[in-house]
Every structure is written in C-alpha cells, then in structure tokens.
Amino acid sequence: MAHTNADDELRAYTLAHGDPSFIHQHVVDAFAAQRADERTKPITLTFALVGLYLHVERSWSGRQVQLAHVKLARQGQDWPTFLLPLDRGTMTASDVMRTAPGAERDRMIDAWCAAVWEAYRSYRDDIITLLRKHSI
Image (cartoon, rainbow, N blue to C red; front, side, top):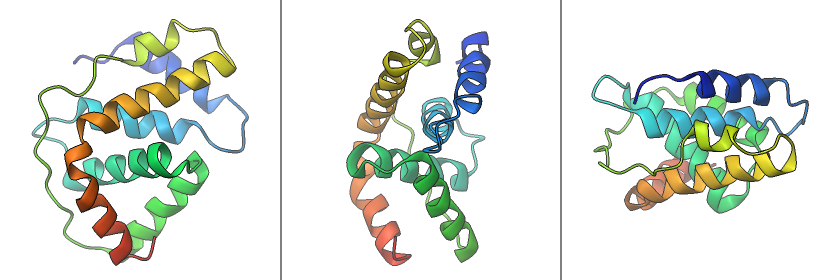
C-alpha cells in the first residue's frame, strides 16, 4: 500500500487532537501493522502488535500503550519475527478520514485498530507471553 494524503491527514488530526489519552498512538500502531512488509524491523511490528492488543483487548489508552513501549524498549532484546498475514483488514486511514471529526472519527480509529488486530490475532498468545515476561 502506498502512502496517501489520508495517512498524513489522519496523523495531523490525532496529533492535534488534544485528548490526553493520546489517540495518535493507536493510529501509529494500526498503520505500522497494516503496512508492514519484509523491510519492517521486528521491533516495529512487535510494538505495533503490542499496542493493538493492549488497546483492543485491554482498553488501554494511547498514553498507556506508549508507556508500555518505553518499558519494553528499555529491556533490549531480540524481538520476535512474525509472518505477515496476506489480509490485514480492508479498512484504511482513508476510511477513517471519511468520517466526521470528533467522536465519530475516534470510534472509527478504534474500529480500524480492531480490524488490523483481528488480522494478526493468531499471534495473541505470543504477545501475551511477551508482555508477561516483561511484567506488563
């Protein structure tokens, strides 16, 4: 998938959001997991999947996810390599940007995260094991 104007517009929207929950983190994670390819570093995809799991299944805010990423980064380790699913959800940043700004768009961001996480759901146990290993 090529980079689009909607990607930039969505990033700008979430960075200017002003909500202390830091919704931007969810967009970063969904984008990274959905757009991952053979050049994506294992740490990038691992952190994206951690963020999606924590948000979708445990209802963590973007700020909480960001703090979990910091804690993991301090551990320093060889990050797992995940096989990329062919289908990573049909919803994209363009779909999110077609919704009205505010609560409706924010709900669409959550739906996008859930769709991308569902594509990687087979790695759920691996992500849980990684988080437990690091007491997250």
